[in-house]
Image (cartoon, rainbow, N blue to C red; front, side, top):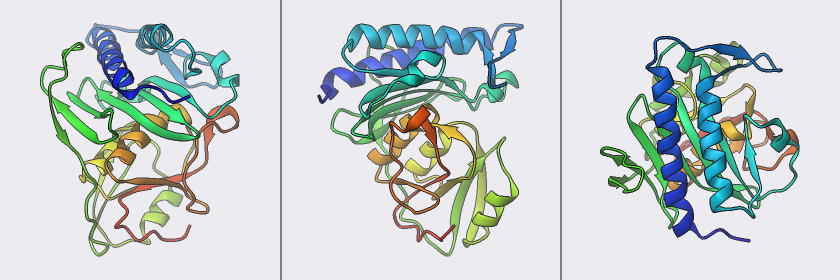
Length: 267
């Protein structure tokens, strides 16, 4: 069953903005509580408030579509390759340290491929989304939940393999990542938190984002969809086959997100 994208896009865009508004209310408050989940990862009231709002909105609009969300452990037992997937606050550590690099992520995956998505960074005032026709855009303006502002199409860079711009994680860099990046002719490096790294490749602000670390499908699906719609690719690190979704437990292997003009190096 294919979703009607004309119906889907306004809903996920609106829910991302409304979720972002909830998050910013808590972000701008004097104090918020940080608790640990069973896997020791941090969670705040912002994650939970945004999740409640977004999942209720998606269930109301698309009751027949499987919903997977980071904050609802029961949903992680679901099986299937076509679903809506949500990370209501990706970059909780960035949020806790008030660094601003956190995002709201909502995506639609069909047959294991993230086809449509929205990535909203409320503290940065940036929003990236796929339109109904599949083209990815960046929206600017006031982010009115009910009316889309000005959008400009985004496309990956025509990368120069002699001078690549690499984007890597702010809080998850390690020697293995640095060793792999060292195989390329790098002009400069950027760091960014959360799913914004996919969006920087999608806009041509970076050429390649290698991730040699643990991620879950809700961390990557929306950014992956945005990158797809901008002409980019995401492949497994080990064999360079496309990164697929609906895997056991929704856990990802290491991966590389890149503009197709980049000549990938072996692991």
